[in-house]
Image (tube, rainbow, N blue to C red; front, side, top):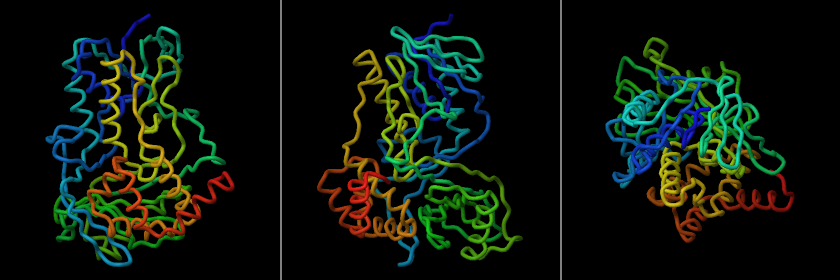
Length: 389
């Protein structure tokens, strides 16, 4: 039976971030096994994140595009926000996978295995990962796999919404986009009782990723995403069918929940990525949070000999997420004005630190005072009086 120091179950963002972080640490000579069912040879997703010059989760050469300005368009018109000291950047999944592969090839005892994980079993001295019938043993296993039955959220106690989207990379025949700014929220689409917006990341005046996005409990039929996005291109951007071509498309579903995802799966198992609750419940952002988590795990291994000495944000952030999710679940039409006011009434530095869960209590109070108070009080009362979402 093959023995490893660390087995990483899942070779996506969480698994590869952790493997690369191990490779940069004093643990780089450890025996590491990375297991994934995919070879990661395709661009299956795009990640975005805000960061400062000294806090970038990947080498800057991997950033496909960066923006210094956010655009929010709502009932009060367009608001352009200079992000300094932050920058908003995009990285393609394939570029990240290639970078991780290059880094891992330099490790003396790192192996990547393509296969299907049958099950993971905890133990006293090690955990066992069975791959296509073959067992592998690791001193610690880091599990980021999301498969049916991975976790079950009690929706009578916790909110469970989805950030779901359909996007296209388009090239237009005439200048349409403003490449210096990211269209973070464009609410000029029918809301139909739930929060809907278009998210635009331009790379030039004629090329951009344009995504139709919803925060809601239920998914749409596939054709409805396409129809609504096409309607936006025609009605808002003034494009006709012959004015643009679609280069690529992408879609996805990101969980949004206040469920306290457990970190430990046993004596020798740590959950990471989405499975370990690294997705921000109220926004769906995860890439930078996962990178920070990987660094914290490695630090725990180096200082304590185990990966479990991990800090968690103040509990109030989960309460803030829960109230917003309650509003989006019960009164989704309020999502657009709430987010618009958050950006209009707060310095961007304070707001982004709030979303990073790095603000002081005084700053949090100022942020909560910048939005309509009654929906949040009603959400809090419903959760604490009835005990139900």
